[in-house]
Length: 408
Image (cartoon, rainbow, N blue to C red; front, side, top):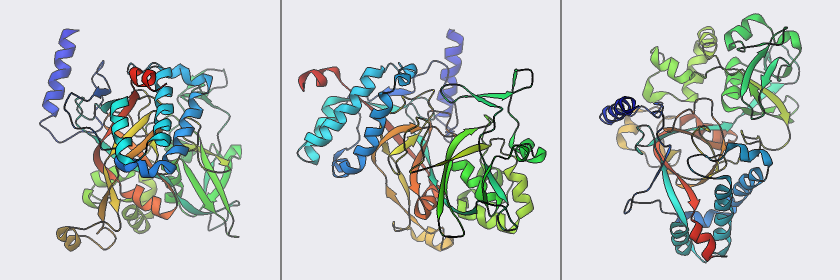
């Protein structure tokens, strides 16, 4: 056991001298949350007081989830009990309603909550890489024709899920389970077409893939109406980033990768695009929805307030303060970037420090060094989500027992 610990420590120390590997898993037994040390700089919460009307609806959705008996199955985690996580949400709601101004709010949060930072990519609080996702608005049709021929599929009957949504596999004729086929196998076999699971048809395979990556889509129909589709399940296979694959093979520069750039490349290389899409083994199934999409907690996700993390590490529904910069069309642009970037890529950044809630799970979010921000619905959300790849930190807040006792 000691030898394993020494080896893990050596791995982490060596990593500290390297470029951050945000996909690095935590060594076994290491905590995902690290309490801020005495004197360590904490986040500044003042600006969030003005955003309380935005924060409260998302906060209430986390409280709603904690009210479900099944939520208790996921606690304790990181030493946090279900009761403490729920009381933390209620106490933040109380402070948002009762504090007199931003300074009062900032001081009250700092006094009443214990603050933890993510162990991050190196297990020592080294930072988190944030990406973005959204609900894109795409053109589609409820019937297939020459223009609309790329379907989104509903959940097949042979896909078996556990109560918590974990994918168990494909049910075989003898009742046993096998791994569900990969994207390439699904597409090559036409197995879903035989089951008449087509929900809606899109214009091109990249649009369908974008819906898969984001887990939801608003589809604008030819008559001007719209239909909404949300996540129903997936085949349980590992997600592979299309952007990373294209960069690795030299099709797109790492400094230029974005959804817009992938669309541009795909339009010029449609057959090659299909090959790369099928290298991603993951395949998502949908259902038609009313209202906003739901995350993995089965509560509505909120643009700019819902975060997706690794749920094996972090407390579901918890309060998270995100400290990161994200792309901004109107942000200041350095002369160097303006000189050497295309007009579409010459954008700045904006501070994105805010309270969010851990309400979703991402296909590629499998470590303490990764998190995915839900940016919302529509073109602006898609623009930001497609370009977000920013280092930062996330902090979890849990109310102190003495704060609950003194304020009762």
